[in-house]
Amino acid sequence: MKYLRFIIVCFTLLAGCTATQYTELASTSDPDDESGIGGTGIIGAITGFGSIFVNGVEVETERGTQLMVDGQRVDSFDFARGDVVEVLAVKQRGITRAERVQVRHEVIGKVDQVDKANNSFTVLGQTVIADTQDVSLPQAGDVVQVSGFRDNTGRVHATHVAQGRGDNLLLSGTVRTIGKDSFYIGEQKVTVGDSASLQAGSRVRVRGQLRGNALDASSLTVLDAHPFGSRVQRLLVQGFISKEAGQAYRIDGVSFTSPDTLQVRQPDPQRVEIKRSASGEWTATRLIGEHGLPQGRPEPRSGAGKVKRAPTRLRRPSMPPRPGMGGAGRPMR
Image (cartoon, rainbow, N blue to C red; front, side, top):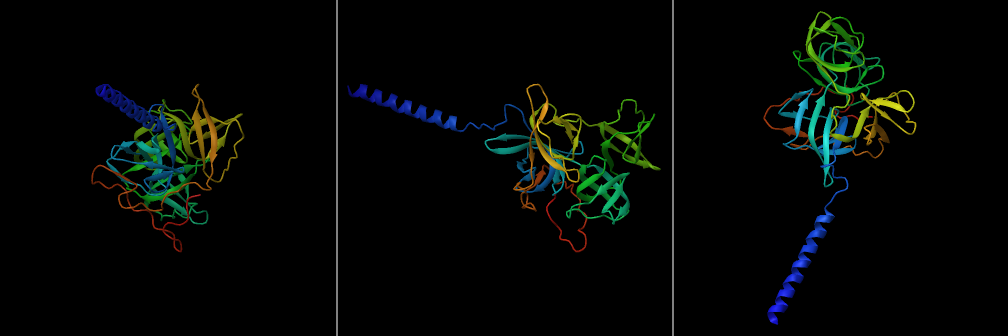
């Protein structure tokens, strides 16, 4: 009888333990866990640090994060406020983790002209607007690398300007005016061996050297309008929104529709969340306002805001602030 009671007690305790374990496992399921359904693509300027903050999202970068700069794999990079990044992210247990971060530049080259009256300068035929206090006007002859967003006229609104290298010319933008062996991005002529495969309106990245007034391409990459392919179901994108026919819009090369009329602010880049439907169409779910948007710290703590696999340092010093203005200035609009 005592033995029977002992067996019953054991079964009761075992059942209780099993039930408790099941409850704990159930409570850890995360409705926002994207590990099995495709992640989130984030395109925008870094506004601050915890790890990195982009479009109000704190994104954790780790040693396993794949890091690229302008399409090339690198071992390390010191992020700066204003760097424009494309982040392939997955949210797991409330933490957004970066699987891949690509830093991109609109133009790298020598400053040809500076227009102080209009707070702008020209690099490789591209007009660059320095319309935030975080960005300082360089000097003519400086070699710079420019991060930012293009407006609907093709001008680059800079979010960060850093020193570049004269042997590393780069130009990203939209193809126009295609000739037999050349095309234009903005006012810059680009020469190629054969332009037959290019189409006006395509977005490309060109590396090369100047030959006279033309940029002689050593490499040319046609950029996908959706840099994350089919791996994401949700996009958080910063850029200039253009209105197209009907309910169609475009931001940073991505076409989407909106059931409601969007309030498009032409002078400034905006942020929008868009989601992919079951049919593969992208639809806006909300505009992301500036008010209350988490920005992160202005400067990273030691070791934060940096992905590193080797001692190589790629970040060159930022351009000095304008006289009479602080180094950090006000946050990007």
